[in-house]
Length: 286
Image 1 (cartoon, rainbow, N blue to C red):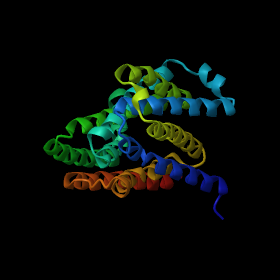
Image 2 (image 1 turned 120 degrees about the vertical axis):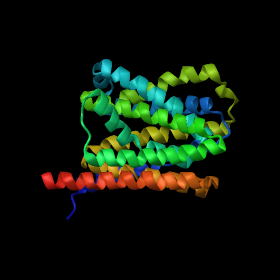
Image 3 (image 1 turned 90 degrees about the vertical axis):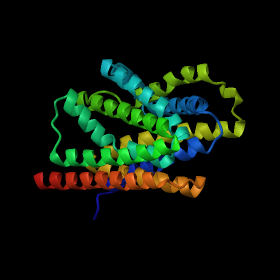
């Protein structure tokens, strides 16, 4: 009989991936500008995450652990979020989701340069494949004038990958509080560039739901990661990549261009191949 602890962990991570796949729907489904989205989403995400920490009686403990690495992670996540939202406004949902799928390999590259962690041949091969896929997508975006959006998506990926490196180097660094603070830092910045009060009330509720739901997704991912192996967390998380374009097609009637489909297939195949082979190698070692 399958362990209920494990099954619950798989369910939590799966739900989290499904939620993350809807980011483009929330962002492109409203007329509000990117900074307004960041403002209302940030308010809700901050409130939800801090509420979660208070209920778990972990806010004080996490605050005590807010050392230099945690503050660096906070700034990196804030920079990534600031690029993440406008990327959806300036590029297709498919492109943003697929560029984000390269995060494991961008992280591996940064770890090689900064931490001298030599990547395996499997990771190098998959990284080259995903780089080729991103190149194909970028070429297509250049023809359509969406290259800025793709660049922002890559910047978000780079910033988040750098934050992952913080947690690899200093694993005792708290995760929930920096996520909340990164959202909170962007609220006054967004207020400088836009007037959030101009967003119609119905869209405000959508954006508040966006922030709360995605904060919940982060919590679910963290809780699920406690129950199942890290490699499986990454593999299940890869579900977000094909689901995001499908949701965009079904809800927004957004059809990915040929270049996105071609590059996307290459990226997704490389991600799944790398994760499956990594799990097999870990199983042999055990």
